[in-house]
Length: 368
Image 1: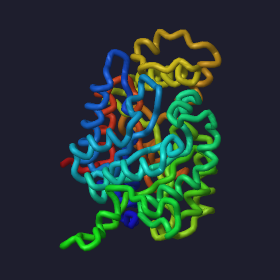
Image 2: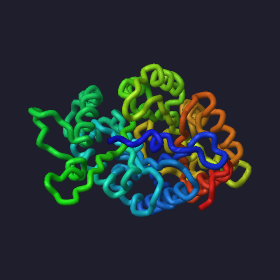
Image 3: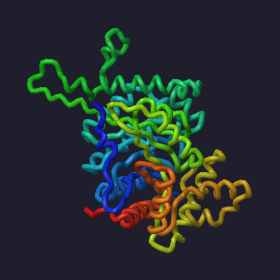
């Protein structure tokens, strides 16, 4: 069965009015390695668990040197071995890139490794450029994957629940680990635990918002790179919502870029500019490692790049811990989000780790 509403909704900790969570892109800074970035992810996950953050998600991206999160399920299995309580999940798996059975097996395995704390966030974008998506999918018909997303989702849910009807071509196929093992026929002392990963739909426009609402699923919106669509998408989700066995009322989280530093905010601004330069390069077909703040300060931005950076950074909440808390609180009030999922984009892993600690302090989250 799906997760309970309590598992989805979590609980506010300390003085935080809204549950806080973490979205990890496993960013790799210039002069750093993927191994170092992944080690930082373990440190952040442990900190998040100890300070009362509700969940920790890893995003799927491909062919981006500065983002070492091409295999969320692999990373999540590693994080599961280093944590005990925090919910772990994908933010998200890009379903058109994969066969639904493969995802059901991967996340069924994760559920077996970390029972009752696995989220399966699903998106329909490729998470990369067209050529890389074609290589992943072994087809050039990329629009077909996005258009078929509702059908792929339905198939995935069938595999996770092990309930294809009699006569279906997949009726005798089972995603293992999964429900089929909990009702092992004739096995003495078999334990029935039909719990499965909690499915979320992710989006940056109205398509997934409407689909999540119609299915009664929780919804995660990518405010950190589609801020202009946040309120319209959340309104559409709430208007489209139909109660289900998963949720009796809509539940929406938003991904937010947020970075706090110990000083007066100067270092936060430097790190944010470095991350913005990385986005400029990505958007112009020159992906690379996240540059240093010094490189960003010396970079000769042209007028078009300046306009892009000003627009991009306007939606990054950064500065002192108190300034970040104020910005997050204001955003939550404007959007009505039920949960805030914070992503800290910076060249330095140490800065990212420290940012989450400062934000936890600003909200009075408990210290283990």
